[in-house]
Amino acid sequence: MSELKYKDMAFELKPQYTDWGDWCYSPQLYFRGAEDIPGAKYNVGWQVFMKPVHWMEPDPHFHREEEYLVFINADLYHPEEFDAEIEIWLGYDVSKMEKHVITKPTILRIPGSMWHCPMDFIRIDKPILFQAVYLDGTSGRVSRQIDADGNEKFVYGGPELMHGCRLDPTKDRCTYCGKCFRLANEGKE
Figure (cartoon, one colour):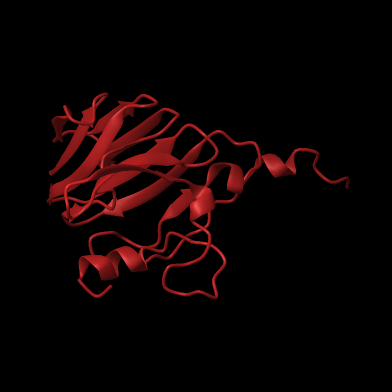
């Protein structure tokens, strides 16, 4: 039997066991775009959120490409049910963003160059499936950060900055395991 000509067009989603905290079910699934299939223009993760959390993007940021955030019931046999509240800030002017509150199954379209975040999962009474869909093969962004003196700066963060693990210098790349986020939220980092 001859080898399949297009076998490189398929990527097997494998469970990624994470350590984000008790608010996020593990394992999760990820497709890292061009990292997993060279040339891909789609980057996505699937996480089940079980408890409220201040999401890991505390600073407003924007991407060059369009992004979609999906919030649905984790029980896919009852997709119409939704028992959670999420707040997210949006706007083209970072100093005049609007707070949006999500209380129903929702897909949020964020056009390229639109500022968004922070995002807070205020209440989760039934687990929700969260999916961030980024329409590019990588996930770079520009964030606005304000230091302790109130000075504003804009910082680029992209996949080339994610080399290595923050906690284990022997690892050559970040696997998005969530342990550094969990420790920071617990005040241990």
